Length: 322
Image 1: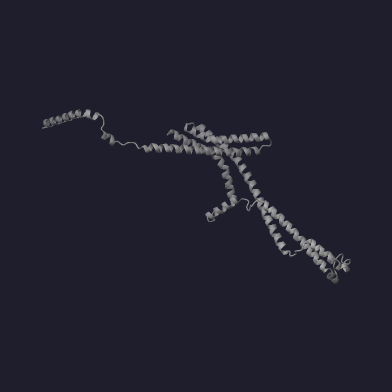
Image 2: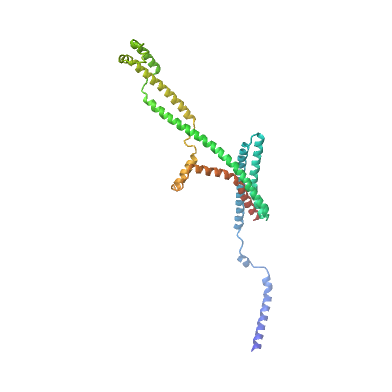
């Protein structure tokens, strides 16, 4: 039985080998069109998407680099200006200004240099570049603080003075207008002087005794000098009226020359009020807090140019690798 089974197995193997040899030329020939139709072709949209992605990345990288250069340019101008103000002589101002410019240029380049050294496995050099960047940023921060505080303080002081002058003028105008309304005399000073001259002969009887109706002590003298005294009082009111009118005109001209400033720092006041309103009064933010935050922002913003440049170069390098 075993011998019969082995013989049958051998015959089956031989038949399979012969059939495979007959089919080998057919399978090794050209592949039919059906096989090609069954293959999966790559989608052409992937190439288009990759190209558009590269364009977008290069555009963003270029925009970031331009922004970094703009930030660096304004930061250099700020620190150069402030450095020049510290010198006692023109030469000293030039030297301090140049030193500030050099520090700003280093602050722009060192972050990218540190990143490149880090990826090149030069850890020590990258650490030195980072330390130098911190040092240059500290120097630039000092200059930026001086520039921001000096200019903001000058502007705020000028607006404070203008607002104070406007308040003073408004108070004077209100006081003078109230006093002017209380004066009922309409005659001019010249007209009253003429009436005084006409009324003077009526007091001739007591003129010498009363020293020209200026020292009236007797009842009869008072009756005689009463018309003259009334005219003199009217003359004084008319003179005061004319003086008030002239002063009101001068104050109006002065008020017109001043700018319409009601607050020394309206930005800080409005921001503080908005913050308190948004937080329901939970955060007791004052205009001084907003002013300090503004100075901090103006000081820190010029120092991020180097970091923005590093991001632009990193994005560009990632695109080149792809």
